[in-house]
Amino acid sequence: MKTGNTLSQSAVYNFIKACEEHKNINLINLALLQGDEVLAQFCKKPYKKDCKQLFFSMTKSFTSLAVGIAADNGLLNLDDYVVSFFKDELPQNPHPNLMKMKVWHLLTMTTGIHENTYARLFPQPDWIRAFLAQEFTHEPGTYYRYSTNATHMLSAIVQKASGQNLEEFLNMYMFSPMNITEAEWELSPEGLTAGGMGLSLYPSSLVKFASLLLNKGLYKGKRIISEEYLVQ
Image (tube, rainbow, N blue to C red; front, side):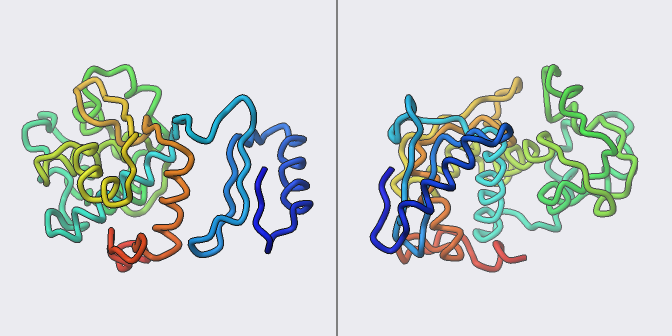
């Protein structure tokens, strides 16, 4: 563990110890920031700070920022209807509520599904078609239900709008400007960059990501994403 002069080492130690003793917390890496300064860092053995780690559902945050960057560049609008991107993938009789769904409903996970359908959709050979073929019991925007597949739809939308897959898009607009070069992504069965999970990065890159958010879309003075998107 390494701490800066302005932070009590005992306070950080006590926090780490409390996490270790909690049955539902498995703390592997810790970084405490103040502005752009890293005040404390911790990495649990046998893990190393320069080893890539799978971020699981934290991947969704990166996908959501890709949508914001695409919107900033005029490639899409948050009020665009989802079906406008998937005319060739729609089922023969789409659910009426699907026709009302907009990009921001995917971002807020208010797509209208009643239950978390991940377990049912995951084994399907095409996650996009499987998502679009669902029953959307609630009108979009009226009911929250966590959905990994909703965020995967955002990956597909970024690709449709930009002509680049999510990995290529983020490499160009966010990762390269932030000197993040090690990103690895899982693919969905239909060959898209998985938007809802599957990103692996160094923990140090997550610190950069946190700095970007704390600085309202700026990284070392460079605008990566608009503040307007982050606060809406």
